[in-house]
Image (cartoon, rainbow, N blue to C red; front, side, top):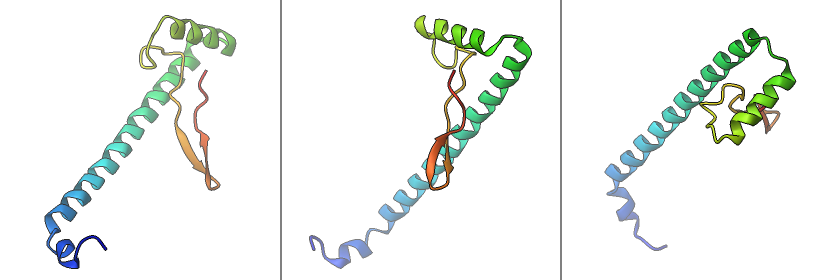
Length: 96
């Protein structure tokens, strides 16, 4: 053992600080997941109303990607989200 037990007993503020940081990190991840899910739903609705076929959407998504458009600027691509499925992860949205 490197430190004596008395060192850990006195580090209550450090433990509280770590717990608060882990909690904030969890909340941030949940909020980011909600934002990405809502953006995907909005994009999927717009894609349904667009009247383009799947091949045309894939072609436009590729054109936007080749022109260095970000995922937020490229409305023809869905943001990829991972979902826990039977002990493993799978893609929730297909990236066109």
